[in-house]
Length: 327
Image (cartoon, rainbow, N blue to C red; front, side):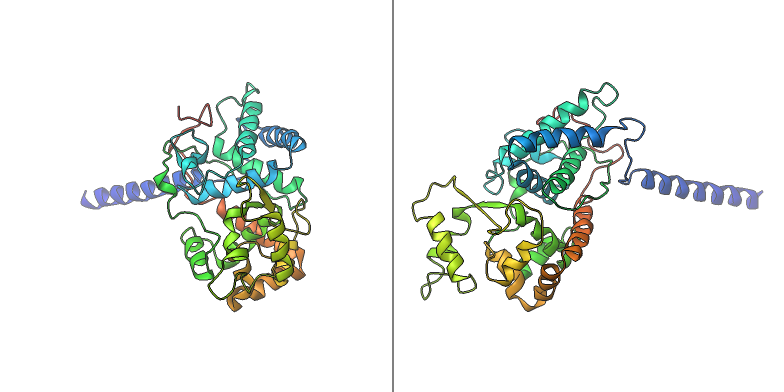
């Protein structure tokens, strides 16, 4: 009798473990997550993003940056989309272009216009899909997007503090912040390559071209000719709304020109140029500059890993009916 009881307990224990394991597996992100509930979701988002992109190129860098900011604060849960007061009120987020938010809103509207899809696809997944589309539209690689994220219910200005990399970061600071999210130095460098279609406001780098140190006005790691060009585009009393392309050569093409620019001292931020000036990361920059294929493969790996950061799955979070507010 005791043996039978012990056997039953063992069976129950094993069954419980299997149940726990299966529930964990089912809660993981996966491609084709909406195969049964909204099978056409990827095409719907693709068409909506393409229409928005045809209206303005800013759609691409704005959406890509929005995804990064979302994932680095509270994880990839679309909390960045929630209306004020929220994350987007923080100084690090106020410069996020409205076209990124509008891209997600239009894609959400398109998805929910399909009766089979209404209120079934999370805003977090729509943002992830839209990000892939803007990369492709600018000439970058296509890649499978893992889906199954749920939307967060919380978004605060305070949560952004010390959560995003800053223009003046050195390599140690960059690695520390990215490692916190399970991203390697190679991942960080590959994701930085997205700056090839990025833009920045003059105030973010003005110290490098006007007041770097008491001994030298211009950052010595900055190509002097490039610095003088930047001074022309960003005079001392420039309109703070003026934005400069981060890639001065092919700013509308997702390519490896960003890394070639770093080799020539044309990294706009200190946190860009340090990837080349620091010996620990220079070899990776050189690899990506010499091989666009190597960069593309590394970017696919890195952005896939980024899309897994802090996700809510299963019964966590919700599927927002309106991406700008919790249900």
